[in-house]
Amino acid sequence: MPQHTVTSYDDELKSLASRVAEMGGLAETMVNDAVSALVRKDSEQAQRIVQTDKRLDQLQHELEEAAVLTIARRQPMAQDLRDIVAAMRISSDLERVGDLAKNIAKRVVAIDDSFNSKRFALGVEHMAELAQQQLKAVLDAYAERDAEAADAVRERDDEIDAIYTSIFRELLTYMMEDPRQISICAHLLFCAKNIERIGDHATNIAENVTYMVTGSQPQDERPKVDETGFVDSEKT
Image (tube, rainbow, N blue to C red; front, top):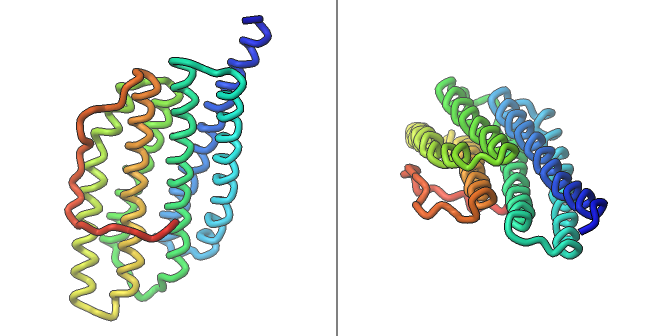
C-alpha cells in the first residue's frame, strides 16, 4: 500500500478516536451539570443541558458516517476493524449517557422546593460522582487501549447499584409516610435510576474496550446488585 494511503488511513482511524474523546468529554460535562442542576434545582442550567444534547447527537451522527465510509473505502480487517466497530459502539453508549443527563435535566423543572432532603442530595451526588469516575476511567482505558483498566471499571459497577438501591428505599419511605410527596419522589426516582444507568453504559464501554484490545468479549456476567426491580421504561 502506498505510503500516502497508509498515512491517510491512519489519520482516519485517529479521527474516529478523537471524535470518541470529544463525545466523552461532552457527556461527562452534561452528567456533572445535570446532577448539579438537580441538587440546586437550577432550571436555567437544566435547560442548557437539554440544548447541549443536540451537539452530542450530531457528533455521534458524524462519527457513524465517518466510520461507515472508512469501512467502505479501506475494507479493514482484524485490529483495525475492531477499532472502528468499538468506536461506533462506544459512541452509541455516550449518546445514551447524554440522553440520560438530558432526562435528569428535564425533571429538574418539574421538581419544586417543597422536597428537601440533605440525605437524598448527598446520596445522589455520591452516586453521580462514582458514575463520573467510572466514565472517566473507561474513556482513559479506551484512549490508552488498556483492557485491564476497562475490566476494573466493569467490576466496580456494583458500588453504584448499591447506592441506588439505598436511595430507592429512602424515597419509597418518603412516599409511604406522606402521599403528597409521591409525584416529586417519582421524579427523583427516575433521576436516580438514570444515574445508575449511566454507570451501566460505562460498563458497556468497558466491555467494548476489552473487545477492541483482545478481540473477545468478557464471558462472565457483570456484577449487579440492584434489588429494587424498578425499570425506567421512559423513551429517551
